[in-house]
Image (tube, rainbow, N blue to C red; front, side, top):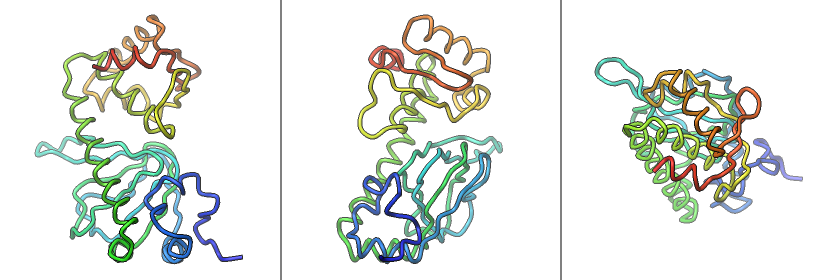
Length: 231
């Protein structure tokens, strides 16, 4: 049996991550030079200004990408969910910080290895470029969400982002989310107060759109109505 240093055979995202663009032999070659690493909630994966020496695939958990503005205020610019690809290819340093907002597990690879494999395997290159484009689109969506005036729309939109990141394909009615952020963290992300976040969650539940289960569980009861609330 071939050595599987990263546990690729049992990886929950192996069929949807960027490495799915490689054949079995190429994936084994990539795995030999990579490493699996766990990060606790709150730990920094990459810091802004670091040399861009590594790329990563998120195997489990949720990461946030953030930057500091001229006033020193941290701004979250993207959320990364399982199978997400974390890299700043062909750059000398990273311009965003990546922080674990839940316990996370990542596969880390040297940047030059990823760039080499992109040159050798067009299918892999296409998946990397698609993942990079999707991350950029997600960042634009989050920035647009935070800029909305209506607090209900902001919160509903964030729940949809979590829903889309928690399952393969389109989310459906009945999906149970385990919120990766506390109400205080949600408030900071969306530019709201904790009290406003609590009121909006209560209102969405009273309208039958969501149902809260436990401390952080949110069941999406009527997904189309949640989309309408976010519009």
